[in-house]
Length: 370
Image 1: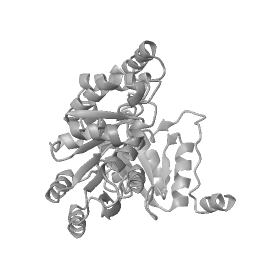
Image 2: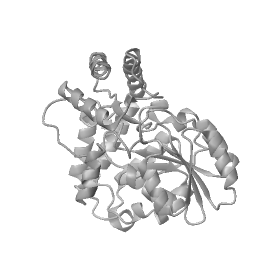
Image 3: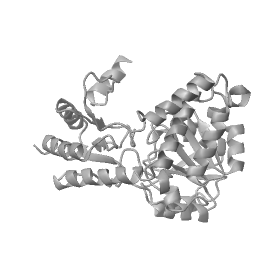
Image 4: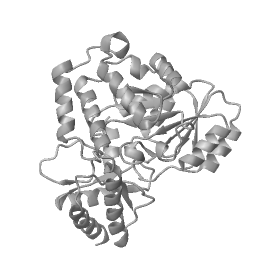
């Protein structure tokens, strides 16, 4: 164990969880719409806590299903434009539950090469064959589907907004290819929900692909400012997941305050339909400022803006330098991203004013370019 930890330190890949001891301007939060501290969200959580208690008290299939679960699932399905929804304990648990419920031995999963770790872990649990297509390359996906046409059930998985790159998947092309080859399609909308699409409904709905995407996965822990995960899908798929998704069956149901907070966040979204568009406007301003200073923001087209560094040690040093200047920016290194692609990951949120963004772009640029 000591040797393993020493090797991580030597490669500049050792990580620690550290509570902040001073005020920093946070560019590492996923609370994109600044809802975690919104008074309506907090009030909804408090109301659910008072009325229903601190815990659901059991798993969903025993006695843990509350009216709040059903209300939230119906609201999420409506937001996403699907007949049904199902809530899980977290986004990670959602993917871990869904993929093995859909495919197994003799089946095949076709995943974008940069798909989130939860999708990769879920693939291993499923015991289906894994075939990874080049990032955002629908043509390569089609080649793989043709090559492995003899597989049993085929499942294509991708993110719509990639968590470490901030770029967008070519969803219409991927959906067309999946449909042509009779494959199920799951799209992870963790970083799109609340930001893209009409009323924050996501990129699937923005592209009008609800009928082509079998499962829209999302989280309650990013733009919605709470905790948990969910899928929107058909009634038949929901029934299958209730009976087959172990991460749904064998765990205590999400607690009332979490459900109340999510419902409160959906209320805020419904009353303020332009929040996502405003976030993307501010992100575009910040990205333009960084690019004007000669920084490489890769293919970012969202609120997630990476600044390419390459070297692990340099990325860590830059993150430390920015912290000294009042900015919380995290260095993203392997295995989260491929070798040689270490970067600073900056997340724009509605907590950032335009003045914050202009000033911060100058600080980041000066730290990197000097």
